[in-house]
Length: 569
Image (cartoon, rainbow, N blue to C red):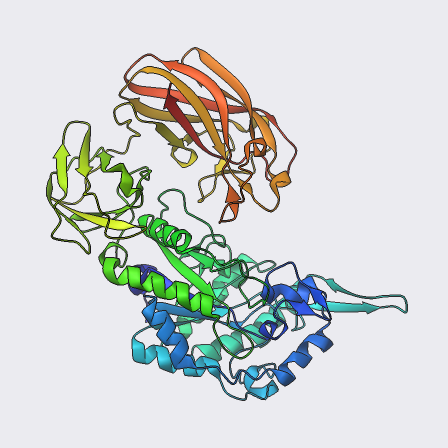
């Protein structure tokens, strides 16, 4: 049975939102072992605290999640509006959370629990019409010989160290794939009904041929089952963005963002950094506007209980989706080149959906839309009129005084055909001009990540960025460079000198982490804004601005540029 990737992806594009579950022996430790707390994520505690295999595997003897209730878990996912559920069948610690027929290191054989929680979840999902999916660590395995990262213990009288090493040989790794991974996959794809996808992770030492072989093996066992991009080497059915990553611009193909509700994935008792509803909706809405799926994680405890703060926030997301589902499920990426500052845009057929966060603006606009607007409505408040006017520059929408939602309210515009949008950056009146890096033309070796920042830019000879944009109001403009740095390690990003050229004008300035906001962001990244100087734009119409690096500080990440802004003085 031959099935193309696009056929497999039909349900996945419609779903848009899924539940991720990280659950395993690490939940027993909850972030602490022998009085030591891990500073890392919960499911990596075995590696991060150097726990020997002989000590870690003892956890299985007491792992007895008697409060686990598959129906309750699926009920939480369903009420949150999640259309698929992906659970860790085997994480990097090598412990199987299912009844693996040929792998005795599993919950049914080694724990007093004896049950197969994944079978119970699969049955519950099938009853609710939710796609059952499995996470499986195909390469990194700290327990099984031959797996990437398998512990090799070295003991002396003075110390006892446990080193994280690669597999002893490629031959041993292939044996691991043949004797551990493939039999496990055969179980998962033979005994649990139709499976939506296999979520592979951390390909590390796997080579392209091995990644392709695993992909083909999954398709052989279940032709309709998707294979995630983290199988390695770009051979999956869809791509996976980095953890908690916001896609900056439209991305070609099918993609997904895995995200957390707090900082960890696996359960930790001391991680109470729960993200706000505003932040989580922002990521959901942003992903939908790029045609990217959103996989949001919960980390149940060792008793099989999903933490109450996770349940509470998921219910709020689900309540919002019930009222605004049409703007998310089955929609496509925004037809506009830039995200508006007031929110995000999705589309379906002849409708575009304006997901408006900054309702206080009262007046929002769309530049470059060639279609005629036939009708408008506000989701959840269809009886309220929305005033729309169109001129040669933009469609202007005047919002009523009251927003139906506290965070994102949705205005639907029905058009006279499929959206037809000018793909230039067009200034509206005298408003700020935004020039995101992902819209620039690059020469040389400058790379731009899906998150919209330059990456690996460590050489001033790498080339330059060229931005083309249409100016409506000539005049004097202040130039601001927006970079990105991680809130936990800003030293990896540093400060760098750039030069910006427009016509016969050039300005130079140092930009970067020196301008970080002192208030820590809710997400992972700072977006410092550095004033570069001022330029005079004398002509309306198409203009060109070029940017190159003059000095790049020797840091791990180099120059991570996100956006240039031009503000009229």
